[in-house]
Length: 340
View 1 (cartoon, rainbow, N blue to C red):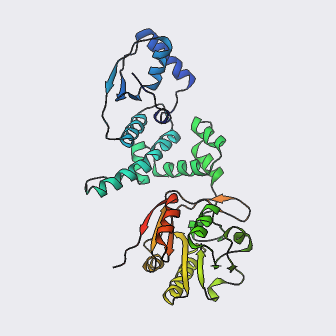
View 2 (tube, rainbow, N blue to C red; view 1 turned 90 degrees about the vertical axis):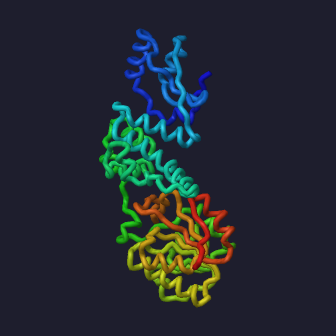
């Protein structure tokens, strides 16, 4: 018995109509020469050959392969597809990026099991190496998949449009450039989660009238009245300006107010700039942190979306750690912060 799982079949780039006909003609003339590869009864390699054999009642042979779990099977299928010569660079990048969360999870398991020799394969450089494409191509493919409408993705996937041209069409200014426009608003799901954790938002010190329609803070400060010149009290939501001077100033002020016991509770959305002094100072007064698994798509005043090139961190200050983790772990991974 052979079981075809849709989740595995979708990992395999489809043959063109001409390629499928050539394979079908070959099997009709010579039979199915290569065995289908099964994991138990589940088909992991030979989906097109299996379909042709079923359609024409042609006998086939099978061989077995062993995996520890579905994640390992998925990684094997992707790597096997990367060995094909008839797929273009975009499809290679797309396949490689599907490996990223699987390799990250595998690395976490190995760390938990105390395995020291597990390679860190979830970097863009390593994925590019496995896909035999450049680091820059991996970046462009990732950007296209995140930002482009379906019709553009299909055009570049089929080769009708180049990766470079598609990338230029979806490229927008990013909050992580640390310069230029600071008016980037947080998507509503993150704000809703903050309300559920804190019950209310007393103050957003870096906002605007338009942004506060989503945030719903009882009080907010704008560029014009400069939140850095006011005291911050109560329960704070803060997504500060991401220019390097502003983000440091806003985070430093929050830390000072926390230390002075003026802030009851706070949730802060910032770049995950863990190497900076302002980030480390923020962590020192925090209770928990969550790192989103995907770059957040911020919103501009005109309704456009843009994702930073750098990932984000959501920092929690307060005593309701369990509620924070319950709400925000749906966006990624995180933990409570242990103080020495």
